[in-house]
Image (cartoon, rainbow, N blue to C red; front, side):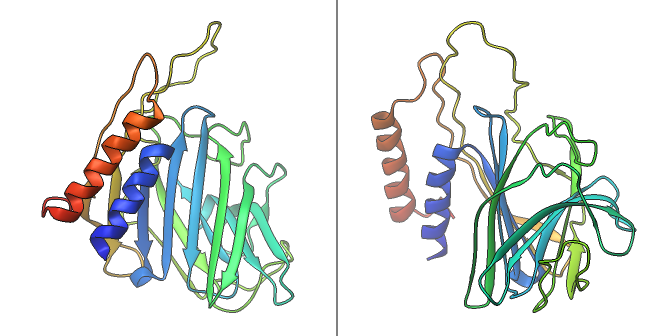
Length: 246
């Protein structure tokens, strides 16, 4: 079952670009993200075992809750969704950003699991947000409240669980290229898949335990859908029948 799940995620990454997944708090808080170079956008998926608010973000300095770039979202008991972009100024309720650069795509609370799907531009032109390029390294920060919501962004209960990664991450994929203004029709993008699974033994220490890296590149003409499908299907069959995938 685990091998099959890895294959499915790898196929999804093939079409969406490279993606990463990190688990915290014994699997109770999970984050995945991908970078779409075509639209210069970061996409996020956050799932937590909580009925209250859940939050995720980035920082250059993980101690003291100073200058965290975070989002907090959830769903009230009445079924109303909320989602906001914050900056932290230290211990206490985060400050709502003047510019809401993160945009919610979907939010679901079901069977005690809250799931956020959202996106942001790589460069938001907002001084309260962290801006990303190919050299940017950040710590991942997370937190949630098991039961209490944060529908009022200026006053809500503190986290019941929180933590941060033990080390810093390159959020962008390694094949990131600085976008430039195009005066002619751009070539099809180079597609590269990669899937890194990182687990944690406690609430703040992710440890890499497995890696699947399947690369397919199409440069000047882009990757046609049928050859890409054939390659992906063949890799899937080999993973199922063989022992080398995971």
